[in-house]
Image 1 (cartoon, helix red, strand yellow):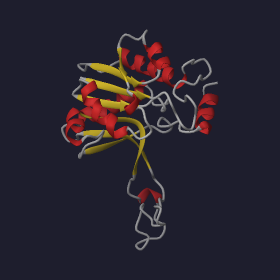
Image 2 (tube, rainbow, N blue to C red):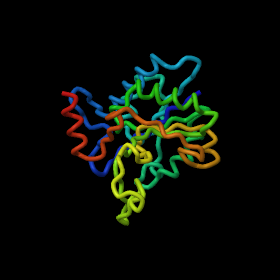
Image 3 (cartoon, rainbow, N blue to C red):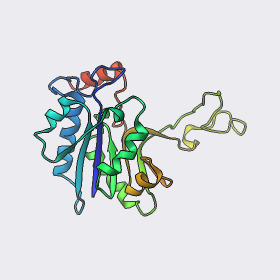
Image 4 (cartoon, rainbow, N blue to C red):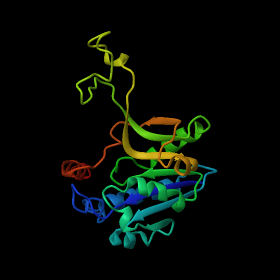
Length: 224
């Protein structure tokens, strides 16, 4: 079984009530959009696989909204698991909350990562699950990248100052749309990804993450 784990916090720093802020016809905004995507995914789920969907939240508005979706389990997120720096603590709780052999962690803040994206993401990982213990949705930095020390990490400039971009080695960027791992990764490594990690490249634009008000307004206009 695959457990979908969706954390939805009440508070947000950059955008007030970001996860539940109304977007056009979606009264519960990003949360409503994501639940509808998962509902569509459930109707077209992969054969021979079982699923459970768990929303971990401290928001009463979200809990009330989810009551009509009987296939979603609600985890009443405590105050200590809802602070700004609680990710490690929440990760440790996940295997106690989720029953699946695989755990897929996803966020409502990636509204373009839809049911088809989840389908492809799961298929790619399951096919390679004997080789890898975990995977994350990734973007590829196919260009020149410099670190905070002003050193190139995309290439060795001593060998060639400006190589062709197609000759650069892939750098995989975690885009936070989805993480999937075997249950043992959570119980043994206390993390969302393990030691044998598979980056799964997202389709262009689907990894768009709403982090600030500019992102929010851009997405809102996109839906018009």
